Image (tube, rainbow, N blue to C red; front, side, top):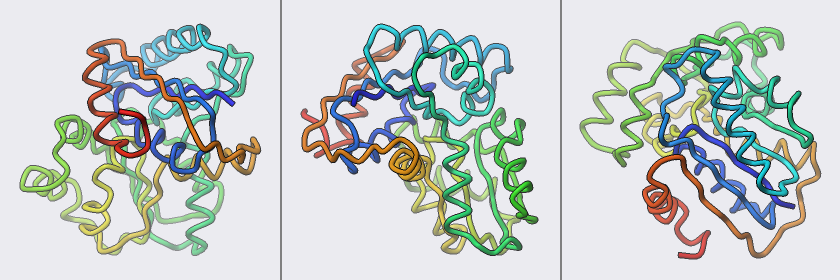
Length: 250
C-alpha cells in the first residue's frame, strides 16, 4: 500500500516514524506545508482551503489512503476532505480518543489536552471524551511548543520555561493527549514535568487505528519515503534524516 501523510509543517514526521517502525506501508508520500505553518493560529476557512489544496497535491500520486497528521486540520477540515476524496482520509483526533479510552478506564481521571489554539478552540477532543463519560478534562493551547520544536530545542532552559508557563498551576494529571504532532519530540519532558502522566501520542494511536480498521498489517521490510514541502524542501529532508535516523535511507 502507498500512504500519503499531510501536515502543516514538520511535526507529522512523528507520525511517519510510527508508521516506519511498524512497517505498515510499502511507500509513504509526505507533504508538509512549511510555507504556511503554523495552521493553529489561522481561521477555519483558511485551514479548510489549505487542506483542500493539499488534497489536490496528493492527487498526483496513486495513494491508497491519506493520513491527516495535523490535529488542526483534523479538527476543522476532515469532513470536507473525506467528502472530496475518493480514497479513505483518516485524521488523528478520533484515533487519539480511542487510544485514551483504551489506556484510561477511570472516567474520573484528570485528563489534559494540549494543542494549538485552533485545535483547543474546536473542542474536538473534549466533545468526544465528554460523550464517552470522562468528566475531568482540562484543555490548554500550548502553541509555543511548536516553534520550540521547529528550532530543534528538545531540552534545556527554554523548554523548561515554556512548560512552567503552561503547566505550573496544574495538579494530579493522570493522562495527557498530545494534540499536536510536534509534541512527541518533547513528550518525555512533558511526561516528567506532569509527574509521569500517561501520554497519548498521535503516531502510536493512528498505527493502532489503521491496523484495526484498515487491516494495515503487511509488515513491509522496506518502505520508500518521498518528502515534499511547500517551502525549503531540503530543510524538511534534513530534519527527516535526523528524526528518522535508521528508519530511512540517507
